[in-house]
Amino acid sequence: MPTAVVHPVSRVAIEAAADAARRGLIDPVLIGPRGKIEAAAAEAGLSAAEWALIDTEHSHEAAGRAAMLAGTGKVAAIMKGSLHSDELLAAILKPEAGLRTERRLSHAYVMSIGSYPKPFVITDAAVNIAPDLAAKADIVQNAADLWRVLFGAGGLLPKVAVLAAVEMVNPRMQATLDAAALCKMAERGQITGCVIDGPLAFDNAVSKEAAREKGIVSPVAGDADILVVPDIEAGNMLAKQLSFLGGAEAAGIVLGARVPIMLTSRADSERARLLSCAIAVLMAEARRTGTPR
Image 1 (cartoon, helix red, strand yellow):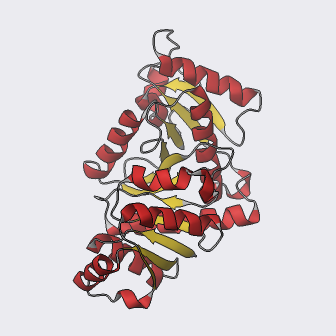
Image 2: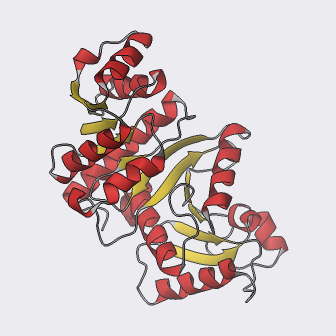
């Protein structure tokens, strides 16, 4: 998959692109200051001459060039290198890039941890700061589409838990009101391709025993595939706690644009970046064939 690798001026960023290329996942197009990219490649024991390289003056220009290449179909995905996420997303969201769809952009962490019996998705932990109800509907739909591409063989539908601090609707807690409204939207066909319930506290979402103790009868409780968090702070802390203290593996991707965007943290491992590439390849193919919808 031709992939714009934006500002890969660190050893980790260029090693991740090289590893994905060696495994046949991507054909990197390196975009950024030539001198810094070549220095990072040399530090990693690589040669930047192996791949196409577009020289730019700085990271802002690199993000803009990547967005334009994706918008014109010259690359099929975008991979974040060593620059701030908001810098990259700002370029992607510009109307002239042509990457916007009817959906809001949202981020999904696909995670796997030994204490839970199956992979799961946390969303949104990196893009939408304090999403309102309309934004959360897009976040849920984006994540459900992603899950069906990765795990939905045979027509399986993901179980979506809309998280809050409590499992009862409380007019003073906006997260519980949004959760209830999202469930009603799914009933009316405004959100499709998933089974959704909420509000659910985190323990009720992932533990059948906890749900049983609280008397919660739900097809989602204790068996969630997708965890929808109330805001970016809750999601970011949850995902990073699972990764850094729980040893979970994670892959990050931004959904809702015309191409998949690999938006890993600069602190993420090379393996996390590689896993993100693998997911992006699957999503790009699904979009090409119309599978997600």
